[in-house]
Length: 127
Image (cartoon, rainbow, N blue to C red; front, top):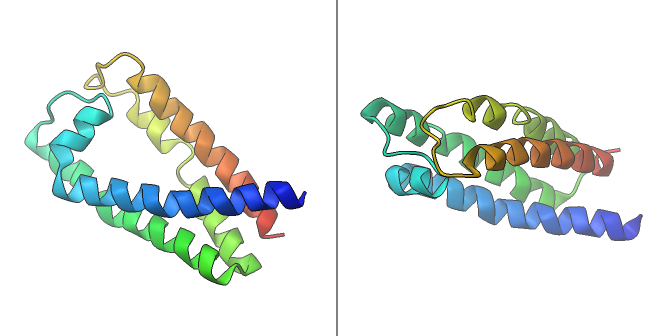
């Protein structure tokens, strides 16, 4: 069990970097970031809706950092709930016809599965 807990803590530290990178990229280079995700060149409104997600991902990075720094059960529990809010969002987004790169939709479904796994794992640390 200690090994699993350490792996979850390591994953948490990696998610700080991932969410910071995703938020920064969405804010500063939304077209390039969307292209990396397999999205066609976005319309103006799609670009700005994506850019609008940057503060959300900065909040995720802050939550991961808080859990890493303090490590209190309430921090892990809050992080589990936060990750839980993202379980279905990418799967819904995968319905967009603008994702044309092969595997892009599967990647979004995988993101939902990863969020489910993180919600369960971080919830375990919160117990």
